[in-house]
Amino acid sequence: MSTPGAAPKWDVVVVGAGHNALVTAAYLAKGGLRTLVLERRERVGGAADTSELADGVRVPTLAHTVGRLRASVQKDLELSRHGLSLVAPDVRVFAPSSDGGAVTLWSDVAKTAAGLRARNAHDADAYAGFDRQVRALGRFLDDLGRSTPPDIKAPGLGDALSALRLGRSFKGLGRDGSRTVLRVLPMAVADLVAESFDDDAVRAALAWRGVRFGNVGPWSAGTAAMLLGDAAGNDGGAAGETVFAKGGPGALSAALAASAREAGAEIRTGAEVTAITSRDGRATGVVLACGEAIEASGVVSGLDPKRTLVGLVDPVALGPSLGWRAGNIRTPGVVAKVNLALKKLPVFPAAVGDESLLRGRILVAPGIDAMERAFDATKYGRWSTQPIIEATIPSLADPSLVESARAGTHVMSVIAQYAPYELRGHRGQAAGDWDVARENLGDTIMSVLESVAPGIGKLVTHRQVLTPVDLERQYGLTGGHPLHAEAGLDQFFVWRPLLGHARYRIALERLYLCGSGAHPGGGITGGPGQNAAREILRDLRGRRG
Ligand SMILES: Cc1cc2nc3c(=O)[nH]c(=O)nc-3n(C[C@H](O)[C@H](O)[C@H](O)COP(=O)(O)OP(=O)(O)OC[C@H]3O[C@@H](n4cnc5c(N)ncnc54)[C@H](O)[C@@H]3O)c2cc1C
Image (cartoon, rainbow, N blue to C red; front, side, top):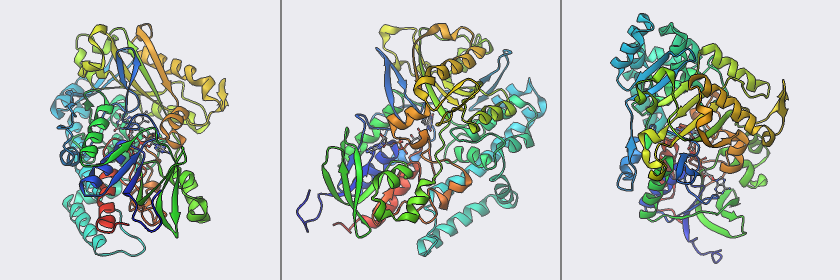
């Protein structure tokens, strides 16, 4: 605690050390602000984490790919000098089916189209055009993603300039493109892909990124926008990015932490924040679980907005109206994670003879209706008995995950959707208690893997199953939501996380939000963290105390 009247020791306290918070902290420290980061867990990185699954075997605990990370963040924070090394396999997606067939999406558009020709000539002809469309609209969404949403109460000169820039970007789409973006954004991704492709398996492989991490199915409105958002600011195009960090996503977090520390930030782990303090409507610091109070000129939260506002800010300071609105931010997690250690590489009949097919994302999404049916389950509080799966075998691209003494061992990282946060119990599934149901869900996910890689179950030496409730307990993700808040059109741009609080300044004077719940949203992008830093520096540089 500082002496009354004296300037606090810290210009900024950053709550949480997820990758976005680390990005913000690094920029703030580089900008000359005395910056302290406080993380509840013993490791930095949040969902961008690598952990030991078994002796000498490390896995990407939650997220597995890092290809959406903004290039400007990598460059500004000199992440390669701080140890970040990326691997990008040629194959982006391998989507096998139980009949031994597969759809494969490569980084090379022509190669993908050539592969599709064996299935369907019409789809092969359509692919390059679809890829161009996704890239063009994704570029516009990237421009939107880099902008601070406008001040809706008192727009200023900055808002006018930003609107001008966006207007130019919109015009740059051309007459057809600008009409298309307005038409496409509210669409269901199932309808979008059906405009170009006939084959259901191709449609599903392309539509997946429109529903990944969301409590939505391919027939839900607004899922086309999620697909395009995933292609914003990266080289993903129609296939999507598949890039691994050597050492797993935890290596990215370590590089960010090193960059922030070098710039002068202090990072404390094992430091849980239990309250954000305020006086006369202005944030003044934080209190830790151990009782220590830390004062600062500004407080930045890298936590999700619901946890920040409902969990940490004094309800009196928040007021009943904002408290109610914050409580209604939608965070319906439907993602489970399974991590496997395998004694050898599993055999996928659709990939026999070409192991390189397994180096990207392995998608089990048999068709659009199968995805929608998997989503249906969560509406009624059940997990899907045929979940959609995105798996990777990162040890193929990055053998360093497995110690040489365990030669032949591989790790598999499996994102499974749909499993609701709240189990309501139906058709033999337990109600309310994931602690009872966790391993049953793990068995269900394994049975889907068995359908495309027979015998995989026998190769498993270690298995970790994380339900949405585990994601909340262990990583502080409210509702188990991987993106801090659902990415629907009602929580997009000026509505993310709440109308009137979308400019990284939230609820109190000098309280800021820099995590995935802020515009432009979740995924390992560093986007909200970078945008927030720009606004915080604008407010606080030269205005300390
Ligand atoms: C299972 C899963 C798989 C995913 N796969 C991918 C993927 O492959 N590619 C991709 O791009 N994205 C993926 N995502 C999404 C992506 O990982 C997240 O959107 C992103 O990492 C969130 O980063 P963040 O910095 O905004 O917040 P977080 O990573 O959530 O960080 C918040 C931090 O705050 C800390 N914290 C919480 N409460 C407190 C407190 N009271 N005091 C102090 N600290 C606190 C937490 O411990 C955590 O470290 C996945 C997410 C999940 C859950």
